[in-house]
Amino acid sequence: MKIAILVMGRLKDRYLEEGIETYFQRLRRYCPIELIRLKEENKPNLASEPRAVQVEGERILAQIKDEDTLIALSEEGQRWDSTRWAGEMQQALDNTRGRLFFVIGSGAGLAPEVKQRADILLSLSPMTFPHQIALLLLTEQIYRAWTILKNEPYHR
Image (tube, rainbow, N blue to C red; front, side):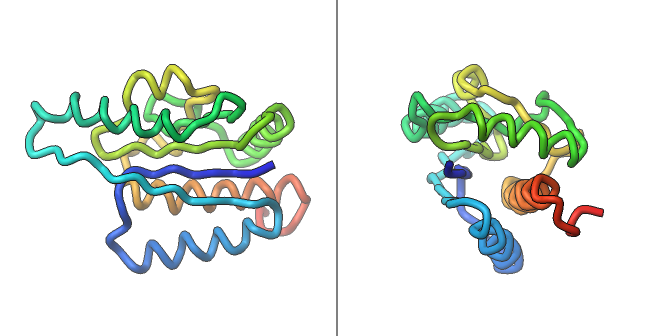
């Protein structure tokens, strides 16, 4: 089993990068994990967003294999507490023939085709976060799920 996280755009804040790397190091105890960063399309105005999101969606879908289980972060996704999330993640890991593949879109969101391909739509919160912070939150929640599944003391 392998986990992949795809995020649109690059990180601009070093402190976020350090936090994300901390959780990636911790996660490697449990499973192989990779981070895929794709270039975010230029969106000079609101009118350009739909086309940019479509192009980003095509690039995202090109990274996903048929056997991958796709979990797309979306504001309309499922909202679970950490214990329920751990169970859902375990079930997804048990049932996937490929990677457990997470996608975080750009600030303009995900293309409808990506959401349609998703096996799970997941929301981290009803609040909106920049994708860099969403990546940090996601990596922490994946780590927390593993510690719950392994009955380790991180999640109290």
